[in-house]
Amino acid sequence: MTTAQDVLLPDIGDFSEVEVIEVLVQPGDQVSLDQSLITLESDKATMEIPSPLAGEVTFLAVKVGDKLSQGDPVLTLEPQVRPDEGPTATTEATAEETETTPAPVIEPEPEPERVAPRPGEAERRQAPVPPRPEDLAIAAGRKPHASPAVRRFARELGVDLTLVEGSGPKHRILKTDVQDYVKKTLARGTAGAPGTSLPFQLPSAPEIDYSKFGAVELTPLPRIKKIGGRRLHLNWLSIPHVTHHDAADITDLEAFRNARRESAATAGIKLTFLPILLKAVAKALERFPNLKASLTGDGERLVLKHFTHLGVAVDTPDGLVVPVIRDVDKKGVYELARELTEASTKAREGKLLPGDMQGGCFTVSSLGGIGGTAFTPIINAPEVAILGISRAETKPVWNGSDFVPRLILPMALSYNHRVIDGAEAARFTGRLRELLEDIRNLLL
View 1: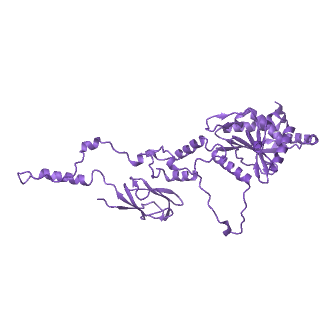
View 2 (view 1 turned 45 degrees about the vertical axis):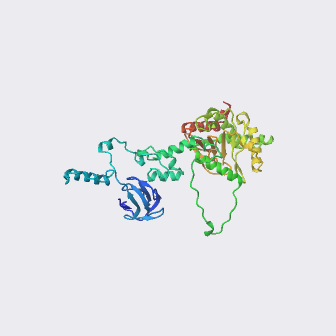
View 3 (view 1 turned 180 degrees about the horizontal axis):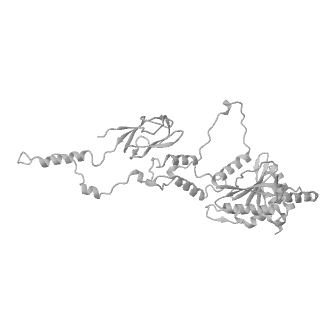
């Protein structure tokens, strides 16, 4: 017979009233020596409390949210009986007494009832040793083997640790295992295309009753923002974004545009900076075709596109939409200006068709007419890059002998780091800067 033992909270250092954030076992579970029982979290550290012995959990004394100090009961364990304890020792002692005590009678006595024979010591050595539970894969109902830091990291990402294969000692799950699981799942393409769900569950936002702080009003989110918001959220989570910032001196370009404004107006065209920018972007993409490519669904191949259809973000009363201007590389600036005006008008009137927003291979988002010095645009998947333009500002620039006023345009290129690296992004914005600073480069 074994006696149930209470497991008390051991010395955890200079901590008291530490909150229980995870209970890793339940009544009826078999636990092994040093297996984690609960996870505590103070304002300074997170720690797992190991089991001091192996056995079966018969009673759980804590729950999530409880606050514990040294000596508080955690649970009750029924210890396991070791194979070399109990009846075996008694049997061996009885056998030893029988050998040393002479029989008092000559006639044979009836055979006394004996304990069932056990294998000898040599047989025990040859018998295969069963694997310990922690050396096996995670069984149904068992908590995965991971440190508190890894558990917290997995919770932040919404990853179910029972689906992660541990590479550490005794199949312990490491932080790199969680990262590899997320990378492999995303690489399968489950989160690469708009409209699909993520391969893991994100924690839901808490519901807050704001009316207790003051007067409130509920208003529905516009449909465009709901649809676009889901796409942006998915793209932000599923694409490894990096943003490269650069700037171009467009002083001479603005002088050229202002000189052509009247002739453009005569042709019924409003010549803004944007159609010239689109023409320069299309020219730069000729040298860097990877920036207008897309990944295949499995993430293993690159789709190179022999066309240049550019999306242009348009601000409407109901939210952001991105009509696509096709074959930008084959059209003149006036023609692009006319198409941009038509697309913007249709967007603000809500008359864009689904086909008007499909087929883009690169997107331009310009906030120059509104303001700001820099921002980080979110990639419009399945594209792999997007260019953000902020308001140009006159700044003093050193020309070697004097500071002269120059019109400087801030640029921000966000790119998918699975396809584009930093060097390629910098070369692309450098090429774009050359084209904008001297428009004659468009002819080369």
